[in-house]
Image 1 (cartoon, rainbow, N blue to C red):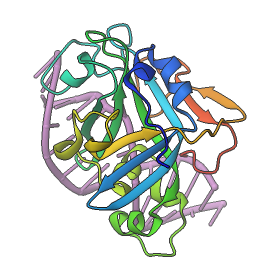
Image 2 (cartoon, rainbow, N blue to C red):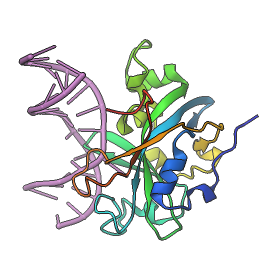
Image 3 (cartoon, rainbow, N blue to C red):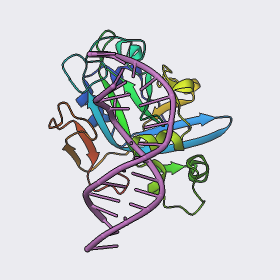
Image 4 (cartoon, helix red, strand yellow):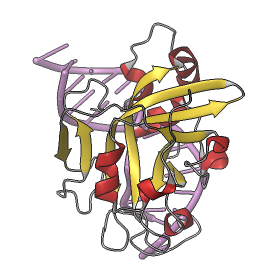
Length: 198
DNA sequence: GGAGCGATGTCCT
DNA sequence: GGACATCGCTCCG
């Protein structure tokens, strides 16, 4: 009775299109039998060479190489000396679009998530996965373990499932925490969801 | 509940 | 050397 995993074809479209489609899908982290899952409620689209705010804007480097590869792979990077951020590559190979996952609504494994976050069992579930750094910590996602993994494969330990949920309303707003192209509304959220960050 | 700010590693200029 | 797709703490209202 396993739910379908999003296939590579899902990620071939431009980042704004894939970003909207990802809202409502379920990010699943499998590790040694335990299963952590959360519904994607907030994402941001990053384009490649035409987007001054994108990591790929200045061209291919060792750090962002995954973005120039095929769609459906995890791009995990380290930021501000202490946090990881998870992206999924999209567009055909050679084009460097990606989607930043900014917030989840926790569904499975909340107790483990709280432990990984260093919080007590009774901490508010809003503190578990509402924010790009938080969700990586709650799901034990790091660059060393997950950069470049195939999120269309169950065997990678990180994949996205479709449980049939369809958001009622999607809202668009400017991306968070960037300086360049700061006005461009490429942040998408499930309108009214409590687990959206900030 | 919101503004201000320090922590801290990696990458590019 | 500076910027950085962040977070959690303090202080103030």
